[in-house]
Length: 198
Image 1: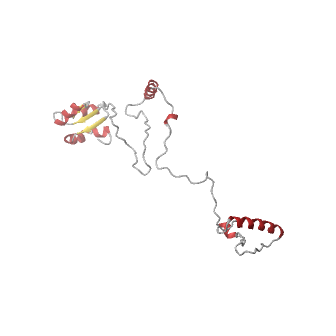
Image 2: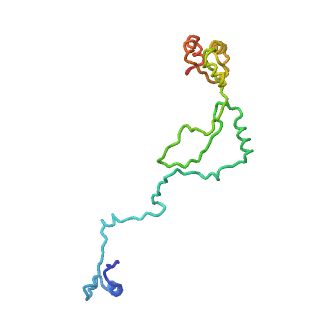
Image 3: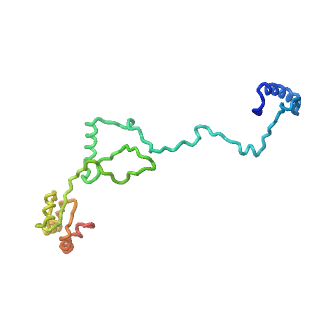
């Protein structure tokens, strides 16, 4: 039973003693001589029980959402010495083509959930070089052919490239055609052999 806060504590203790003894003997509340010492009984209705506040336990309370992504602890990951790691990487490369991706990189980035998203491609600080054999179809005496040879193209020219492709000797991974040689490429029929994108 909750008592109003406007009464003094000594009066309340006296009222508490009289009310408990009177409740044991009678069903009606005791009438006191002082108008300040009135007892109030609260009855809870069914409607009040319906809207009663239910305190949830701590485990069921909704947790705050994180502002950053959850990051696993890298100390729990399997760790190798540098020599062992290189042995495993070299063993994993056996039988794979050099054009295929060899390594899987796990980066630890601290980014906000509502911040910029890293997807698809990244520019690494140092280029990862794979040896590509490039063929350049250009007039042999042109400036484009000389620049291609200076950059390290494996095959440069027009007629010699067309003859090599027709014979089935395709010793290159990528083929680039200069704009001046497009008509000769279409007339030679080599584009059908090389496929789309030429």
